[in-house]
Image 1 (spheres, helix red, strand yellow):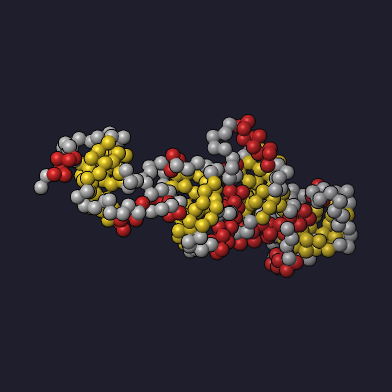
Image 2 (tube, rainbow, N blue to C red):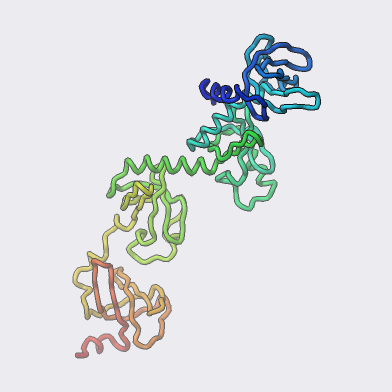
Length: 360
């Protein structure tokens, strides 16, 4: 994770003319002397800067320590300590490049891979250059909801040492806060992947997929890196109220690409349109006035619905207000049949159907 020299130069030059140094200001200076206490840096100000030896101990192992005559970048950490020193930091100045990098990630919304080095009760710790980033547990996409503390610790430990996708969501150098999100990174990655899949799709194509989740309004199916929705009305030609009674998570299905909304990044799929349409294949058996048999499938506020032996379902108007329970067999008369609108209106026949048919 590098930063360009121009970016760091811009930060440094912005502080060159500051007469009264403030915490967080960056300067460039030359090492004048070195001792067991630390370094003295000529900053071109009225006072020299002092780098404590403890700060030099914060530099990465194996990285050479600045020596007399070297030009170094430093950050002000205390404009005036109890001894009257202008205390500056070499390690924090070097971290400034990582803060710049983090800020760019935040502004551009980029997704990158991080390698968690540890965890605590709140989430994961992820190195970001010389910085320590933090992923709150609430920003982990697959952390089980309602998990107790022990289960959460086991889950977090499994992620340590494994690469995870991340996005920067907060950068605050003054408070030393760098907050990352795995959940937002995964969501963005899925959206970008979905956009790529949509670009390759065409309406009317047939794709193999796997059911990934079920909702009351339909089922989501992964068709190769992107989820499409099969609306409940597109699962079957028959009326269904619970997609879970027809489909199962992990089931392989063959679906028709029904609609593509590239602007909204949505894919509409259909299962039923790969099956014969019963509304167009019943022939002349269903005509207004025809008397047929059916089975009650469900009750509604204005009557019941019944499925005819040919497989079509229609609404049955009742004459006496009684609602026969689901599963009951009925004799019905066709009142209206509109296959184009998939509309079938029926009325229940009381008594013998032969007598009803013979009536003028």
